[in-house]
Length: 453
Image 1 (cartoon, rainbow, N blue to C red):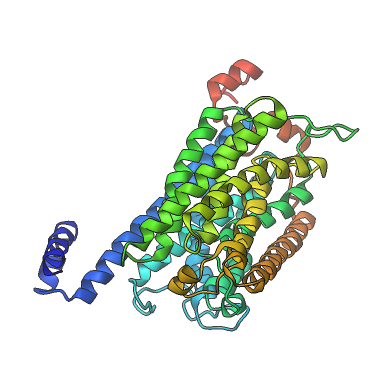
Image 2 (image 1 turned 60 degrees about the vertical axis):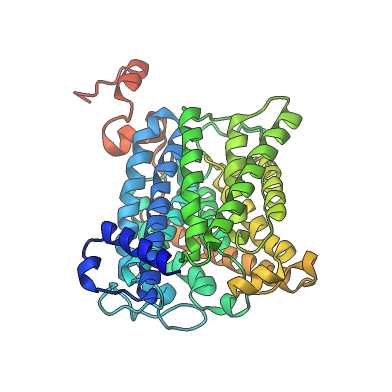
């Protein structure tokens, strides 16, 4: 044990030279805090890097004429989310308040006065902010290719201040669902379902893109312009997910983060395989976008349960998620809901399944280890945990959808949500930003001169 501590001290001294002068003999507790902080900050960086995955996913899944807009608004909204989360978001989740929402004791977050039991406050803030930014990016899936840039600006503020913090407080901040023992280790509900339900509100109010549906209800496929981008995005998100899930341990500890990562990999693999196979069986061709969405659906589904289930269950959860996302996409098409990047299926349907799966597969040993809730139905827990998971999903989903719908409806009355038909046809790159993301290609296609405009 002493040898391990000496090696750890030497490694940390190389990474953080000031530690060598701060204390001659750091205590085991100090070393633990340093290691936990290092791991959690690394995980936060991985989660933030997922924004690159969202840029490529949304860009690759939409048309070339909107590519620059997609990339630019993602960077812009992440920046705005940072400021709002610093001002009020973090405090409304974790400051002492009531069962519904936290207080404002940590408004305009000041690490000098903030408190944290195990991690430096700044690292805890960075980790939690990265999750909020992911949820916001998920919401944008329902706005793609037709929303005004000004809507992204205003709704970023509203979502980060009024929607995400409330649900996060309910489950992670000591709110009423936490008191009831709801299990959501890394955010199938808090992050993914919350974002997906806001996306649903957005796409309903914005209405479908021009040409998506015919008068007889049949669907026209509006293909994304770059499947390679989409595939690369899934790989980036997949790697970032280890920060998402394994990072949620917030500790190096006994290596439990490795078990969480292992389950995450199994869930993603199951989703990718089952989605490819079901599309091959039903369509007669192995559909690449479906396979990519299956991998993401497996990741979303295992996010709630990665710390609560055995590996075999992680595979099952992923397999079910892959099939579910395939039929969910068809279901939303039948409802004439235009979901350009399948956010409702990947993050919504799979988020619900992943959360409910805890009520089936959570083991008593892991529930006790994590310290939340109890074992699921298949391990002798009856329907108790499943019931908590069910009303937790319904409550969180309903809150996100209703509040997002009301806020967006008010914005629609005040400023409008959608660009004009002409602006949508020429593309948001040109109409909102004055230049195309692919100027040479678009000039050839439309005769547009990138110099003269």
